[in-house]
Length: 312
Image (cartoon, rainbow, N blue to C red; front, side):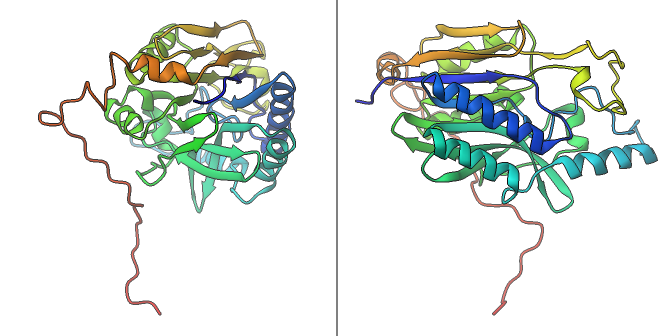
């Protein structure tokens, strides 16, 4: 039996293209949530490094404009490395508060950037990451593809924590892979602020009989640099993402949100035993499974472009 605790989802504007400023804001928000009693704090997708809403990166079909290459250079420069000051700052905040944090970042690795969720433990610092497996639409122009080696579900005193980013939540096989790992605290950093997102989060909670914590930014055009090429215009008051963050229980009951009002922190009291009670009549990888009819194979090996044999 695990003890009840308080969880928080952060709905706030990032500082796009200024990763240190975004990390400073995230650290302050984490401390604020922890001061309010939150042991688990979930941030939106791409909170550090920025979600490039409305940007085209100069790529009509069959063409790459020179300005698009410059835009990508700037975006690459704003991405973070996991041994950099931004992660160190977040680790210090989790150490000071004892909270566990899940936060979306843009991770730089060589010439490629990835949409990544980081897992930070108060006692251990950065303990794991998940790289988004399938960037959506034009995201594929700028983000690399993760592989099955970064789909962790982490055992903690609060429960088993994992993250599925934005439209990965529409991948049934990925959800099944997470359920199979016994996820109980299903974190969903997102950039999807549509009305239908709430129904998706309720469906995931019901399907997995888990708590779902979804965090989305509430951000306007004015948060981006003046020279940011945005298809939605230059009016600083234009809302690019309107939030919709929420927390759902294992029977689909909404504990907090969805909230579209502006920057906020949503809280909910979590009873971990509700997961087992929910699985009384539906356990998708247990008594409700039919492995004689349906099976899922998951490749968790890292996928490398170059393999060197015989070294040493």
